[in-house]
Length: 90
Image (spheres, helix red, strand yellow):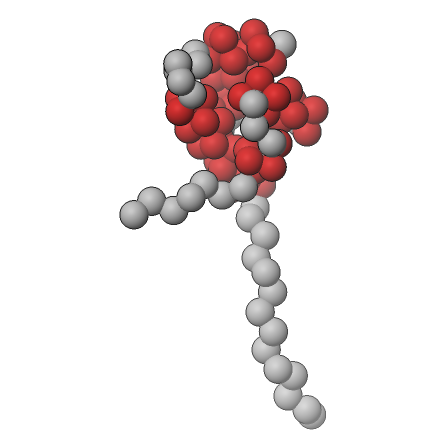
């Protein structure tokens, strides 16, 4: 038997990890806005309920792509910015 070279596969995050990344990014970006954007203002701009935005930030909801796009537009960022792992802290 010929030995196969061990190839490392790129590890994709699991669903729970992606939801946590989205939650952290939405909260971080929203709070980083000047002036700070409240959940209520974000919800209004994205045409969502405030409790839904809150649940997304807590990682309790798994938003659809269309909802991610609405949130991204309200935050004035690209949708990809919401699903990319946040920069590592030092």
